[in-house]
Length: 454
Image (cartoon, rainbow, N blue to C red):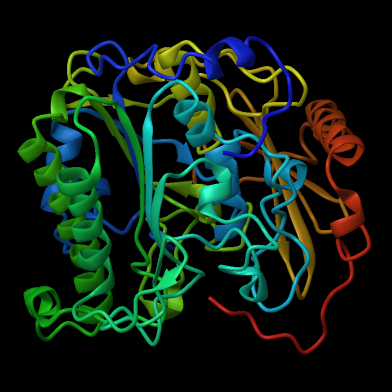
């Protein structure tokens, strides 16, 4: 494990690796992340046709968040925030990481897996990674999952290639796996089950990341799932959602088989909003993937933790992916790092519908290569959205106007100015702390002729 900067009581925690070995006192954690799954892409969230029986079951056994957010409108940044609790421009993963780019999840960032590992947890990551560029993937010169606290990992860079069917680009603990027969989500879930049953020490608590590729393109769907929608023009996409839901069921079954479901906090979410070109839907929200409007950042969010979360409950309290870091640390009793800004908050109150206390407002900045960035900030029911240059603003009362149809900026100039100042206060802090040498020059420099890679 890489050295962790000295802060709070880290030396004490790291010197007592088996202090929290009792899983009943210190639960297991499974974070299941879908890829490009929109807020409206499931029966659980109201889609009239898409079948998601396992997500439905998870919601019936836990809490469904109606206002769960990703930390960014695109994948690499939102995933970095889950691991670090820090908004992406602050932690350095400020853009979609592909090709040959210098940005990556830096070794200096502190992740919840490495902190948990330091107190005796075993850790596993399976599925998509995408926290370094293509050229940095599986190279020792740049941090890989093992450098961020994972004992075991089977991962790909971004997409499953050549598609979700029979992928050949997975790497297990640094060694290429070769072609795998089957469909990506099921293969990833099977690896998670294998680790849990055959490798994990049952005497220790564990933290597992299951980051499936579905429904990210290039989409390939097992006929057993697409046939459920036979004759529908969107059968491939809808079946792909059911395919990832089936993988969620595999993980849930593996937890049952291991006898640890009651001692596990299982959180399901998505990394950003949908891509309509492939069939995704934001459920009536404005915007899609790469937008800082609700459709780009409001995503499914379901949590199950028996004995701690009321089964079948619904929470309207806003939570965000970066809250996962702070929540996990609070549950196991590890203080937050005090040498850096942590943007996420402890979401435990939201499990029962109580407000979350935040020191940093909900904030988004989504880089899009053609147009720059799109910023937004939410405080209470108020949300401000800026243009790319941050000199024009829209104001919405999100609780009443969740579709963002009624811009109140002109009607409420004083409130708009108040929110504008709050937006810049957060942004100025990020500029002062983040690795701006990576992104400041590119922030508002469109890449003409560039083609989006969904």
